[in-house]
Image (cartoon, rainbow, N blue to C red; front, side, top):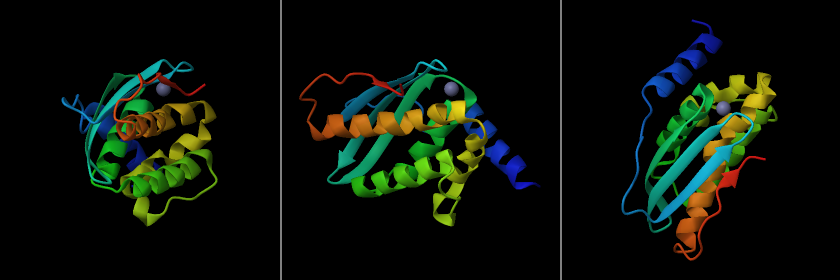
Length: 153
Ligand code: ZN
């Protein structure tokens, strides 16, 4: 099987059977994201345990890339320390924008590397990560302020 076929399989699988789909209640942090270019919408809720992201769920609707990316992300970040989440985001961003090559530690997230051939899709794939950052910021602030929806524009 070609690597690109394998990547396509992973995207299709996560789009059809999204992992960690739903809504956490109660949650420590929550944020909504919107990609107006494509119409993708995401809502992320999460719970922390100390400096670790203990649990998270996403809900939303959008294109296959946005949904698969969110599903893959939830699997990849669950249980990580917050600084590890940030490091992973930088790696994924490099992967999506073509400034980094897939590395073994990215695991299934490497399936998103095909997105770099479609620049308009990069925002679809990165929406969940921006929304996760906002949800982590919301948790860090203790829901101090209402969170503006994240927009990729
Ligand atoms: Zn999209």
